[in-house]
Length: 379
Image (cartoon, rainbow, N blue to C red; front, side, top):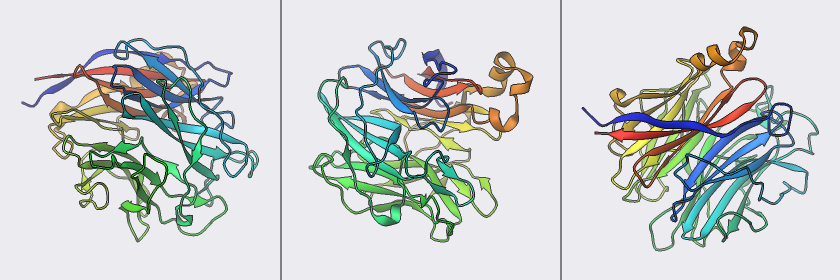
């Protein structure tokens, strides 16, 4: 019998406040720093596609059991000089005391009040990727520095935090997803790529494909990236078949050359949207995911290594949306299409004490909260 996961503790990191610019909290992620501090960020806004959205920062010094009040330390950025909103920011500690934040901003001015995604063209509003640095544990940050993208990327989506390789250059890896421009009605050939920096994020090299179907049939969305103790890079993708119009199982790829080439995509046998993986020094890996269209829950499994088998017997339910909905919201709010999207986006982080911290959002049509759960591993 493999080791088992159990929920040791759980709680609320931050609560959304209905009717305010903090009503909807999503896109939570967390980084364990070398001094034991946990830094989490989450996006706040009046709704899930709000022009007033901004990323907040939270701190914990007790392993994620309690959290500070939200801070808003990040400076403003303007995509192509336009009024912009901050959708997500990920923090990485590249050396003790040095933090890098990589972020995705959305131009909210060029197309006025139009939504982020056009369902007719499948295009997105203009976006930009920016990087900033902090030397005081995230209390203050440098101005955002724009990371230029090749034209074929289109509006770039940021899929996970920066990964630092254990090579002589401390190479950084940036994971970016391509999109179509807002009014582009041509076929969408989606792909996800890696960029590398060997100078601490000052400059970036040419992109390498990390997930791409040249036929345009299979999309590799929301790529989550981790690094094994040996320095291999592993990715997990939310996979969509445009021909059958169905979400497929999560697929995994492994790179042994720093993200320049990958193994063939491997079907992990469960669907649909993966978390950032929690990878421990001995290789043990915990992956959470959202099963919106099946059990309507957030679940997690354990593997002995990032490229190992996520045994079904290790599976645990982190959050049951159907159960929560029966207790927390009225029948009228149980509209299926709305309810399916009022929870999700789990993010896992390996903690120094051997537990896994999982962050995710959940709530109803009026507010979304950021939840946390500590998972313990039992032999």
